[in-house]
Each structure stands twice: as C-alpha cells, then as structure tokens.
Length: 140
Image (cartoon, rainbow, N blue to C red; front, top):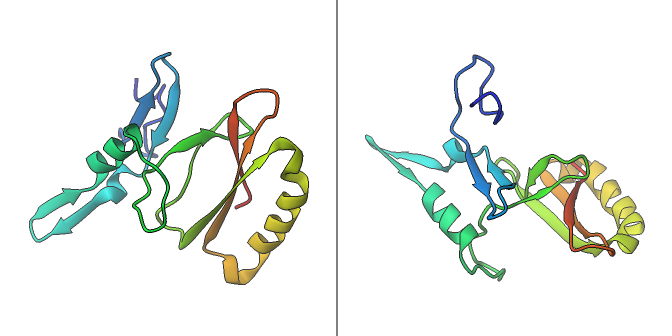
C-alpha cells in the first residue's frame, strides 16, 4: 500500500506522510513535510504536526501574524501542491480568476527569476470561471 500511495523513499522504506481524504473519498492533501514538524528538545521530540492538522480542519481564517496551516491544491498537471515549503524564506500567493492570469503570471515569473527572490516561492491560486475548482500555478 505504501508504494501505491507514493510513500516509499529511495531505499524502499515507508516515509512518514499524512493524507487528508475528503468525505467523497478523494485525496485533498498530502503532507510530505511531517518529519520537518519535529523539533528535538534535549532527549524529547516535539511536533507541531497535530496542531497543523487541527488548524487545517478547523475554522481557520487568514490574518496578519497568525500561524498558517499547511494546505494543498491540485496543480495544473493533477499533482497535489502545498501552499508553502518550510525551506523557503517566504511564499507569495496571488489569488486570481482565470481571465486575469496571463498578465500577472508574466510579471510574477519575472520576479521569480531575479536572484534576490531565489528563496521565495511564487504561487498563483486560480479559480476557473466555469467551475469552483481552484488550482495552483507554481512559478518556482
């Protein structure tokens, strides 16, 4: 089953991965960053993973200064993409309707190519005007 879920590492060992599955039985999120949520304090391991999942499943609202739960949207290629990567210095997320994408994507792609933004992820959250489907367009 680990193989079917894509949870095997290069040595064939199952990695720690959390899958969020909707009421309809569809995978809506894959958190492959679980080990990154652990911090060693002396001989003890502390984890923010449970809190991250609780926030994701609760009534979280974006506000300046609040902790961001990890969440995912499908990529244009059908892959599942997280909103941020812990190794990034920052993530710039822009929400657009499908008709607005081309002009903004060109400008953001230019910013993403600049050396001063090398550790910043650029993502566009796009809503298809015909449906309520949202997808990530990742520029880096």
